[in-house]
Image (cartoon, rainbow, N blue to C red; front, side, top):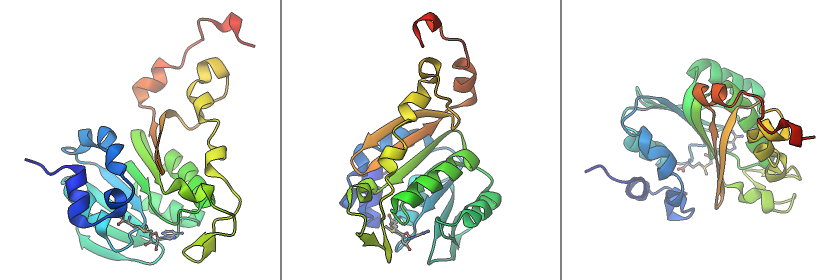
Length: 217
Ligand SMILES: C[S@@+](CC[C@H](N)C(=O)[O-])C[C@H]1O[C@@H](n2cnc3c(N)ncnc32)[C@H](O)[C@@H]1O
């Protein structure tokens, strides 16, 4: 029998379950991908615990990781590329190299400005239709601006406020706020946000005139 997400995270020693409790949220999005061959990207290598876990959880995945400090090739399907998520040219370079990804996890700098800018670039340019984007460690959005991680202050930018229009974008049929990003769903769990991108089928289905148009302003 296959080991569960929780068991593999525990075996690898990643804080995804040892501290964060992401096993309460991730399996309902990720279990269906376990037998699929697809490409995924994680931002933030750390000491490699989650890289090990992802490659075991998804045995057919082509796993890419970027980190500001690390470059390594563990196997043909597990590559760590040195890149800084706060630099658009690095995100462009990685997008050019990978092409597209079905799953993206941001466990990098945890800086709210980086979390937002990285999301805006990769969700549009790297994530496939129907793909899943996870932002971890959003706790920094509740910190004082002069608190810091990895030698940088978190600053006063707030990711949570900046994505507060996403529910209106999802409900563009009624709100008239354009869903330019093609967001399908947004799920908030403790210390993480899971955002899915509309499939082509969803995009076509919801591209229609609102039946109660006369009631909207
Ligand atoms: C929390 S660790 C990642 C842990 C790993 N994902 C795990 O669960 O085992 C965060 C990593 O992000 C990297 N990092 C920090 N700032 C970054 C940036 N601007 N761009 C890319 N990586 C960054 C750090 O070097 C560190 O290795």
